Image 1 (cartoon, rainbow, N blue to C red):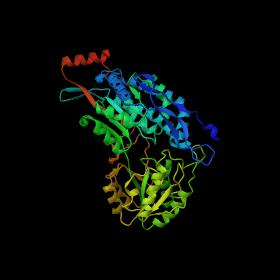
Image 2 (cartoon, rainbow, N blue to C red):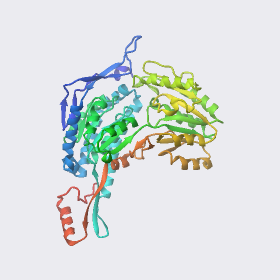
Image 3 (cartoon, rainbow, N blue to C red):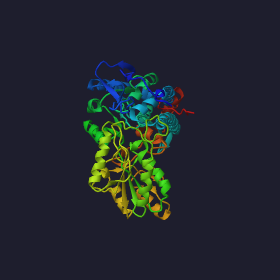
Image 4 (tube, helix red, strand yellow):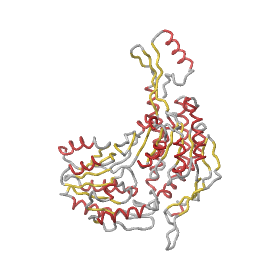
Length: 525
């Protein structure tokens, strides 16, 4: 299909959502550009996509006051609402969201350079995530729709909200990963302040009205602008109960340091990773290369779950390098809407130079770029470079490159990659390639204590969303998934009463009268 089918008119977002109102921003704005150049000519020219409000500390505090009022020390309409009514609100939002699929998918392609297939998948996966989360909350509520008794005490145990949540999502999955924070936080009865990432920001604008129409005032507050201007004033107040962030650990630490009461600040964090592949001598090379291509370079390697380093046994490293390099050079680069485009423009203007710096540093310390196209640079892209042999003195060994460069490290003893993983600041996932169960079995036992997901003969990945998604050390705090995220944004709380005639009479009356939304044995079908 021609470019004309994917063009969008500039979106100048002049509204933000606070206290259930779409308010017009009268202050300064920031232009939003795509690194994709569609103009003919010799000089590179980014494409203007629109603009967003450049909001300040005053508007940040306004949003905080709105969220505080909506929670109202646990007395607000939303935290005290019947579970089934909160579920109805969320379902209505998911239904309305689907009306905007076409424009959001286009914005994913333009704003962050994600190819059409992956952009469509991100949207559809997000909608599915919302419906799956609704279903899981029904399951949680069903299991809570009864009384327990122990030692002469009746207990009615449910999950309750934590309070006000500051939600900050990432640019690489500005819809899916962001909503994996926002949706469970809202659904569990919390009130939220949400600031989209710098890239992938305009795609939230078509959804503002849906948020306004589907949730009570103050439950969802959406701000635009720079995090460094908006977030510190909010954190400094001490009124944020949960910091929900997917991004870099340095950002998480900086925001925590702003909070005066760290002891009561709950953290739900998805952070950086340096996921390795370990390729044993008996690995199926064709399968391994296919999975390592996908694992290291899908969406140009801009995933926390990407394979960031490949450990290959020295007995097969030459054969692996030869086949892998050729496979990398055969990958198709194109615009996000081009058929079969695997590699696409990078959304961050500074990223090509950063990748080139990593390559130059590695080469200066003994590595070689072993694929022919590796390191070819344009204004908005750096072609994937396969670096070999990589050692611990190189920047690319330590840093999460988050882009199209693939370090390959040979190993003789399995202790070498295991020692590196143990020393690493990260511990999210690993991919293990091999066939001998006598070797694989003990390795799995060790790896399961170094990371949180061991992928057997497959690349590292986020999904399915019902499976745990977390990490050790600097890779995560708490667990995100359909099941675990609802628990991360809530706390077990209960009503207890001694088993006597007086209390039992009161409990029965509460159940019969529906005077309490908490004390309820209603079963949600």
